[in-house]
Image (cartoon, rainbow, N blue to C red):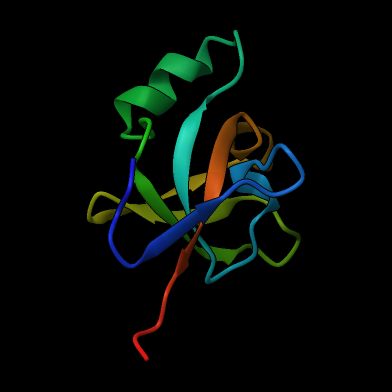
Amino acid sequence: MAIPGIRLQRVNGSLSLADLEPGASAVVEGIHTAAPGAQRLQDLGFLRDTRVEVVRRAPLGDPIEFELRGYRICLRHSEAAWIHVFRDDRIQPG
């Protein structure tokens, strides 16, 4: 899916939402787990092609706060690791 002004790239073949630092954005590729929580994550809006931004991490790294679809949500590091993403690097106009 081509989005004007946005470069999507996969880093090292696989990148999970848990790998991103605060301030980084990504686009959901999919949820990769058979755990019962996968359906819950989809219900919360973590769907393919959804843009997600990492807002901040708790002092010890868990949980992580994300912003997507106009709201914020915290996930455990282990749950965020199930969500595979493409990095969303906005191209700054020249």
